[in-house]
Image (cartoon, rainbow, N blue to C red):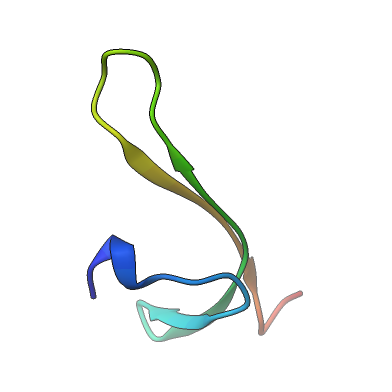
Amino acid sequence: MKSTELKSNMGIKIDNKLYLITRLEHRTPGNLRAFIQVTIRDLNNG
């Protein structure tokens, strides 16, 4: 999956664990390359 396909409140699977994307931010710091920063929450442990 590409990082541009990620959306807020989307469930993703990493290493057979389910996570929920709680915040997604597209950042472009000055002259540097842009990147996407996400905050995720583990659905199994809270």
